[in-house]
Image (cartoon, rainbow, N blue to C red; front, side, top):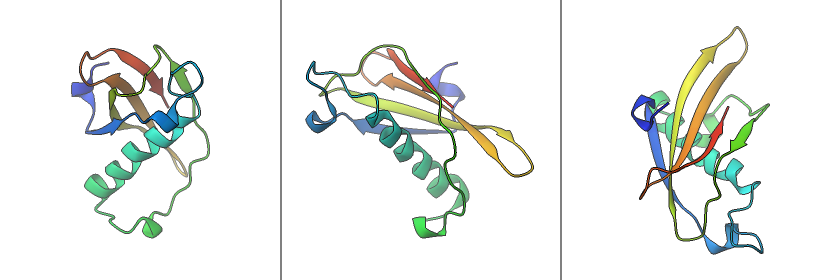
Length: 108
């Protein structure tokens, strides 16, 4: 999957506070990065600008970490709708380095 396949791509700069003792972006921080892309999707695709009007919850997340992100890198986070069910739907995400295109993570 390439970034061109995603309807929305959000840029997220990594911050020092997001890193662990080794200098990698901590795995738990990726959830916040995915949220940035998800809120951008809701704003641009659904037209919702007041996030209190978002009427769905995040119930499950899967993240496959591919290469570590470091402080000072800018992540490009692609998001697209992959499944619509009766009472739920799925997004898929691709996280890559803006400068090199290096794949950092994939999520659902």
